[in-house]
Amino acid sequence: MQKKIPQRQCMGCRERKAKKELIRVVRGTDGVVSLDFSGKLNGRGAYICPNAACLAKAQKAKSLERSLEVPIPQEVYVRLAKEMEAGVDG
Image (cartoon, rainbow, N blue to C red):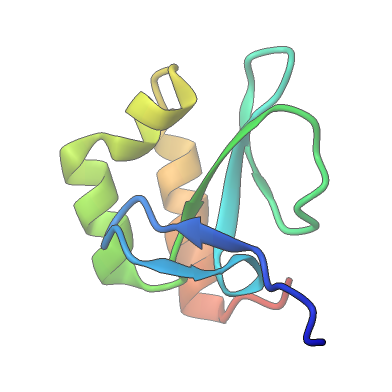
């Protein structure tokens, strides 16, 4: 029997994909928003595809902010864009 692959929804394109293909943005228990490449940090998480189009859609619709229930600092969006350009290795 094949092992079940965890699925998560991208906050940009709204497609369900394998959890390992997505980048996790997490609001920690202290309220700080950060990127979680291990997928193991404590806190509320939201997922986004590693491409600029999904990031732009999520930023415009404020879907990450709604999902994490806090305003997202611009630095987080900038870091996400840099990680996507560099090719996510997490």
